[in-house]
Length: 566
Image (cartoon, rainbow, N blue to C red):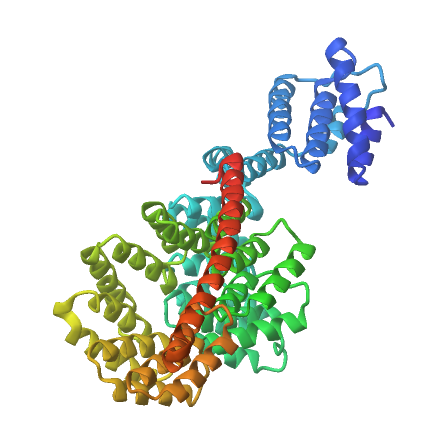
């Protein structure tokens, strides 16, 4: 047993720090005396040394050392016989068996390049491996890189090759479905394994559910996943619950989405996947204290995932600390450039900071990654409207309507744009009526219809609409709007009650607070002067808070520049 065998055994035992030290010393000895080790032994040392550096997360250094190993392998290939070394020789056949795989070394180089965001270099390295020698993990990495680069046909080919070798590679199946490959075609690639192995009959239904999801047919996806979740063998599966919660979210059903995320959390307290969407929904609903707790808990689980950064960013955004939200969103993207929620967070933060063109870039990237998520399109349309691009917004809304069909969400998006043009108010009304006919409980449609009725001063009709909706669900915005309508018809007492309910649901809802304060002033005209002085004092206090917030925002902005994340 020679020294190289000892190094190999330490590497196999996971003693990476020990391997790094000894291999460094042995490589220096080899440099000073080239005759000390044979080419094959030097190749092994370089690979083990690179592996130890990779384990220390020094990826650029590791890639360099792996490339040095490949150069040494070329020298080895030209050598017909392995020269005996002074440290004790073995037969060439035995050494050849112990040599690290050249294909594995190339995979490690690609892995380093991927982590360093050098995707083109990673693709180039993997494409240098002959197709017949590519293992499933190489094809999977290639498929993901091709997909990220927008090379969809190459990605489909690589995903299919993964399935050919491993028909139960479910992430590869999701990859194919996300690239618009038909569910029936994907299912056919797994049919043999489903028929040959007992208790796998659910897989075809699972594929169908994901096909509906990626096809934008959310209701059929929900029904299919529910049928799977009810089966005794798959009941309380965390992945299924998270998938179901995500589809409810896509369908605009916030209540059921939150419910399913909470069920998944109870089953797995260390769950990270999907928690960014859950945190966003909770922040949007005004539960900022719960969001802060959730973010802290996830940071304790792992700060190397995008989700906890997104959750903290959502907390900052809904606390109106946009610069900090921007920094946190950028950090999340740095950890996972495919995080749609991180892109959306950064997009809305940029939009609210007046950097609309930069926001548009992020929304477009989110759309590319998740073409069936309507919130990506809504963000882009909001940017167009903010920059007076009504024509662009109308084109985008019409495209969504034609592509995804006439459902409550697409009808509401199109109506939202129509409301911006005085010439298309009637069309907006028709679209909203159609949306509410399909889903009377769809809050966004109710809000837009109430806005339209307010413009037309049809207050009684607006009150009836809001009361009917609130009979089945409670929502801060709806209660506040009902309060506004009640003020318009001089029903001040109930208006005050509605504002109070709205603030109990979201204590940070500024518009409800303003409505309540305005009513208090109108109800007490004799104390107007006193109240005004009090308000002025409160206002100055708020201004002080805002100044503190601005100074904090500058600090976060400085951090953004420091990390190069703007």
